[in-house]
Every structure is written in C-alpha cells, then in structure tokens.
Amino acid sequence: MTSADSLNPIHGLPVAGTDYLTLIRGAGANPEALEQLYQTARRGGSATAFRGAIAAAHQESPENLLYGAWYFRLHQPDAESLSRRFAGISTWAVPIGVVLGM
Image (cartoon, rainbow, N blue to C red; front, top):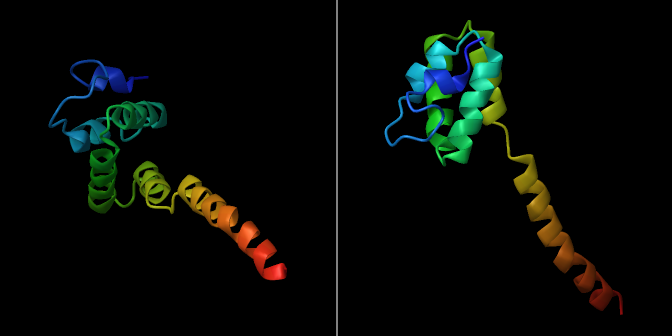
C-alpha cells in the first residue's frame, strides 16, 4: 500500500499551497493512505483545505464510494463541539434552576 507520506513530497510535513486534490486523487482507492493524508493535514492546520479538496473530488467522481464516505464524514455536525456547547449550557442551567426553585 502507498502511504500518504509517500504521496506528499516532503513526507507528511505540511506545505503551504499543498494540492490536496491531487494527493486525494492519488489515494482515491486506498482508505489507509487517505486517512493518513487527512491526519497529516489536520496536524498541519490544513483540515479546511483537505475538506474542500474532498468535496471537489466527490463532486467530480460521485461514484467513488471512498470520496462519498469522506465527504459525508467531514460534513457532519461536529459532535465534540455540540457536547462542549451542551456542557456550557448545563453549567449555567443547574444554578439557575436552583435559584428559580427557591
């Protein structure tokens, strides 16, 4: 299997202007390489660029199930973000409920 690092010219280090669409096309039949490419992009602060490239790859090749899975994976509401917001709300809801109950 081809690793995502071998697809990236400097072996996984984030590069300004990395063409994620080209890298994604190269890993289009390799789930492991695509996951490694995503993790590299995420660690390098390029998750948004990766997400946009996945959307473009999915649009140009909707029959590719791997692109489709990644597209829907990356376009779901952020579950962690939702739980953090709920935790913040519940932090205030309990004391307010106690005060109102008195």
